Length: 415
Image 1: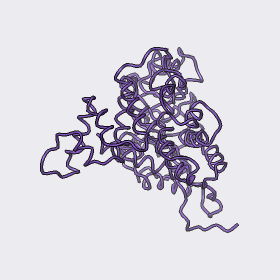
Image 2: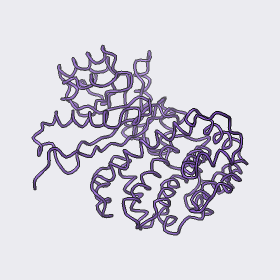
Image 3: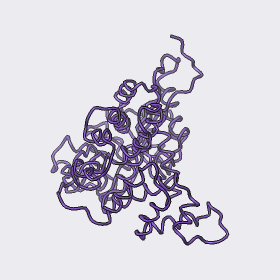
């Protein structure tokens, strides 16, 4: 097989949030793989060159602001990248150089860490209690500890040791359940990593609060193909926060109006149905997640856009607008603290979307599974599932990158 060395490679990148104790995003760890079908060796590259190219593609191709939304971006560095001072290509205020477990620590590595520390770069270390790792502690601002590998008491001892005198912030990683989150907080951790926030904390068969019910009704109305300005107006104008956002949006500098718009109807007409569908979806999800972590809304929107774009690539096998709703509703169990079956029971979803959300192996479910696998950095699984759908090999990477850009632009416009 002949390889076109000039053909652009898909950049495989996803992100995992690092949250504080209140559920707010502190930063993102960026997970990335450089190539798809062509290996670095096949292109005559060394591992160091391939790693540097991949890092450059991730940072320059999408931009740290898009990838991390202005928050600290935790980037994994190999020994070669570290010693080669590749980090100096990145802005020190926005990046955290992450040193993975198994890093061979020698004088070159210690000196590189010392130099980066003195140059204003922050380092994070996946901690293992051994003499080699201990040599790096004077230069480290973040320590990541796998809470699955030890008891709460042992974790608390480490937190107390490393937090003394604000020497380093300690991050609990692999936090995959609400119970693990509670135990990590009890141990004294202040930062947490893991998809525990994507799972329901409690599942109570109680009625939805009226405000959240209104948001659910709005989401349902928005998926109707023939929904018009009048129907959206009737829902929006009964919610003060939505009305405020619509008027603020249309009166923003982006529209350059000479006179202020004070009518919801006029605002909706000027904005247009297509943009308002998406923006009101954003505001509705934000309303549903009030009191919880805002990252749930972010992940829901990314999933929605990814599912929509994959639906478009399938060329009519599914309705891409319904795939947007599929991704948007995929975390309703965590958003509403209810079993998913109850959360979607009153939504007039298409039958195949509803069964997909509940786990049936149909085309919408397969699309959602591609997105979730990619989101978690399970690249091979995402590629296998994409190929099974007849999608191009670079589809998951392409749609995720596009979704990140879309979500970033949307959050700015709808803020």
